[in-house]
Length: 206
Ligand code: HMH
Image (cartoon, rainbow, N blue to C red; front, side, top):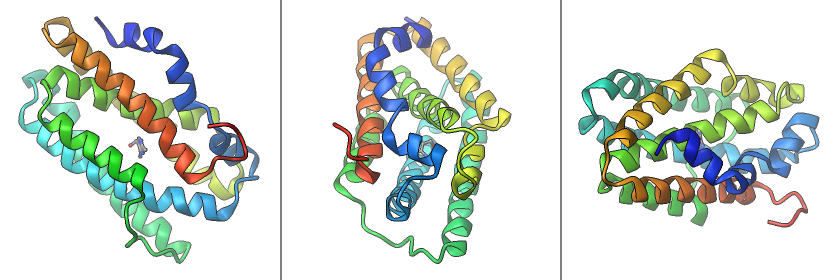
């Protein structure tokens, strides 16, 4: 199994994770400010949880995946500072509670701590690949939100996602846990859809 096979197998769910009224409204500027704020605060909490997960994954990674994962850990720590700057500029309070969707995602990441390495690296690739695709669809974005669109569409982020894909493919090529990797990827797609819905349903069916 490979990452491209997984994407093809879960094409419908991939589509639902990467296209959403929230992203359409980021593109055309019609997103209510409160919805963006909800997303920003909850995503800050999510990135903190992802950093914890990724640091643990690095500790058990294949030798060939250490560089991309270590780089990603540094990147996530910098991303937290970037969120803090963004929140400061918008006078937003980041010290919020996790909403149920964010808590469910955190619990999923904790479960992945105990999953076979191939399943966990595949899930991580899925998490980041969804963001690249999602924000690419919102480009260039209304000026209000353009910095966020640019953040997840820069070439360096695309290269990072490619690097995670190579690490996942390497793990998938020799694993006996392909079924668990498939399940983990499918669950990422459901979680990502739910995360957009948490921020804003946009009047559309969920
Ligand atoms: C919900 N998924 C979510 N937030 C993010 N910041 C990413 C993926 C990418 O890091």
